[in-house]
Amino acid sequence: MKKSRRHALGQHFLASPAVLRKIVGVIDPKPGDVLVEIGAGRGGLTAALAETAGRVIAVEKDERLIPALERDMPPNVEVVHADVLSMDFRELRRRAGVPALRVVGNIPYSISSPLLFRVLDDRVVFSDCVFLLQKEVAARVTAGPGSKSYAPLGILLQNEFEARVAFTVAPGSFSPPPKVQSALLTLRRRPVPLHPGAAEEPFRTFLRAAFAERRKMLWKNLARRSSAATLAAAYTALGLARNVRAEELPADSLFALFQALHS
Image 1 (cartoon, rainbow, N blue to C red):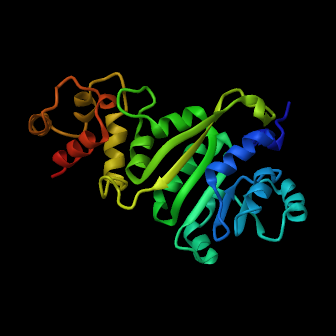
Image 2 (image 1 turned 180 degrees about the vertical axis):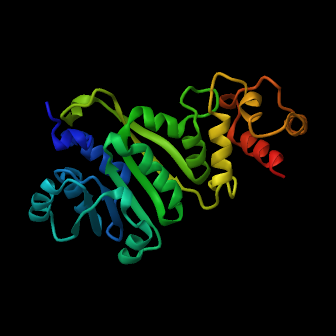
Image 3 (image 1 turned 90 degrees about the vertical axis):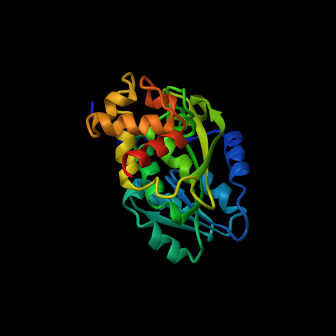
């Protein structure tokens, strides 16, 4: 049987008024705010945000939903038919006439990780983000060392943003219900990154290598790129045990090791 376009896009529309109110409470839109909503869908969250926000730019990829959004939304909502992964956020900020964008949305599961990497790449454009997404993805963003969810994406985002899970949402709050739990993730950009330069490609490459095989010792994962002598010198300088795994080290130690290996 051919999948419906909605299913192909991974859309699960939020159907709970109570959850909508909680989300709006976390976002706390103000009259002077310009909010960019990703995945406007049927417009439930859009309309709720527009009640207090100065302006809402509602982005929706599914062209079948555009006519109803354009018809039903209040005048302070601009409906944009676009694929958010291809959007120029810097140009959008310029058009909006604000120093930084506030971005919110019920994010299709299929684009959660690519979207979060876009947020990382364009981090200077955003003041904060509030995303309803798969609980597992939210856990990867907020996890600390020692957790099975601790991963490069979370390390990189936490370097640039204060990340937390506001609350979780059960499948029954959506139509159609997804098979997994969801969570509301908030990202508030830090005034200064914890480690300037950590968002750039060299450290990303280091993290991919470090976490390539989680069950292996970090030394073995890094030995493909660095000599034993270089690793030994860095480990000794930082007081690292030879058998430590990447998932056991806090971001500070991982960045220090990266710097030691690339000094």
